Amino acid sequence: RSKYSENTDFNRIYESSHPEDLALIELGTLSGKSFQVSNRPDNPSEYTTKHKGEEVKYSILGVNDFSYDRKRFSIVAKPLGKDVPAYVYAKGSAVSMKSVLDMTDIEATYYDSCVSRLQKEGYKVVVLAGKELPKEEEEDYYKKYQSCKMSLYSQNEELETLAKTVEQELKWVGVIALEDELRPDASEMVQSLHQAKIKTWLVTGDNQENATNISYSTNIINEKTHLYHLKFDNAEDG
Image (cartoon, rainbow, N blue to C red; front, side, top):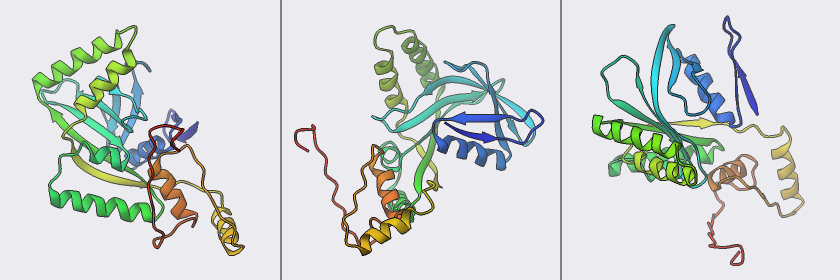
């Protein structure tokens, strides 16, 4: 697990199994918006944040956890005590997010160009998006979410289906490029292998995008490399 320490009177420390989450928390803090506390770790109903020193509380209608099927994470929330629509905040990989974004052809072309450039530079790309939920959709989502959390036999499947439903027609907010730290001598070692004409393979359980990014940053491949993506339905075909 990775840690991020915030210099406050309470010496707050954040922990996560995903380093990108801590990077986003640090980015928010530098922008004057920081996460303070959740009222409970499982099925939270309230988050407390600070916006430029002012405490702001959010009512949490649902947390749609990351899954390897969707490759996305989202949360549905609204400010407490304010008559404003609920909002879906989502983040995920470039490919998975593109499939749920509401974009024009021009926006889609720019999106592909931006993502491709960052990936070729070796960065891990995280796409941010969101949308407002009309009152009826907000109430419908909250009822279904609570019903899913009460399910005894198919909770994960029901929550996954609900997440896919609410994570549709999102508006693209932005792209964040994260640098995965490699061992200091990784690139030099790969270069030495190439010079010795030793074939180099990257074997990883990571997703395709991250594996490609790391391959670029370690010089296993470069911009002149022709990439072929093979997908097999089962292990026997591979």
